[in-house]
Length: 90
Image 1 (cartoon, helix red, strand yellow):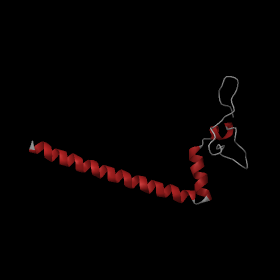
Image 2 (cartoon, helix red, strand yellow):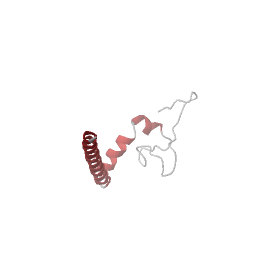
Image 3 (cartoon, helix red, strand yellow):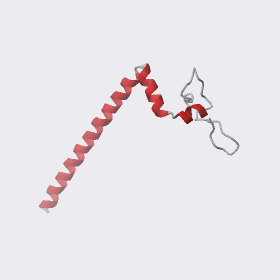
Image 4 (cartoon, helix red, strand yellow):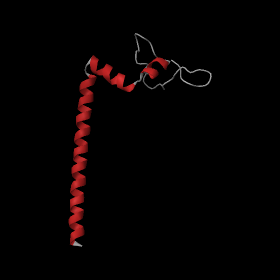
């Protein structure tokens, strides 16, 4: 019984350590994201990662100058042009 208690303490400590490391990584990633959002280059990079080339050009919202990533307006669903078979086209 003592051995099981010791093992439980070890496992509990390891779990707390992993949880603390996870929270620290998430906090660092959030800080990096906020830093990226403060620059034009950072926002472009975020959008390039988020929207593939096919998604950009097939999007109903795509505009070369005003919306080069084809991102939908806030609160709107992503809409894409498609052919008669229902496949997205570019």
